Image 1 (cartoon, rainbow, N blue to C red):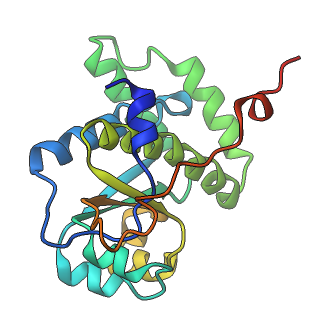
Image 2: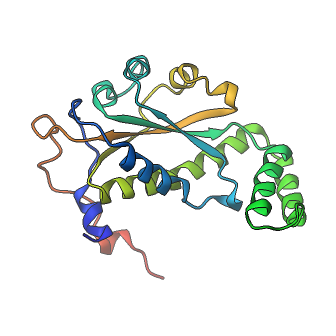
Length: 210
């Protein structure tokens, strides 16, 4: 199938079959697609926390808009962004770049100095607003890859960030949760959306040509 066909197939599943689990191989493929997503300056200022432990999911449903969806999914991917930028974080990323590319460390100093100056003039809140936006690119890649594998997914912002951050100890990692992605296989009888037509704004309205 083409990517367009895969995207027409997928929808935000409203009920999962808790007895069906995503294989570790397929999970890895989805995570790899998310890891390969582009980010601003290649900094990848976020991490993905994979939750498959049922006890943790049961704790995380506090404050969730669709608790049963979270509870019955195979895995919950938590997209968590850096709470702020720092010179040390930027240097670590670019030292990795030079190591992988067999270049001398400091090869990109003029660029990283510029980044440090830009982010140094911003507040932690401005940093998080930027890092959080980067997660959505990765989230889209993950959903597209899941669709290609015929694995159902549901993106979610309807949850208590404070609850998730505390349960997963994200503050200690310098991270804050941004969004969730539930993965699994739909329960066709309970998923009321699965029999409905996909609805999007018509192309002629969606695209504005100048």
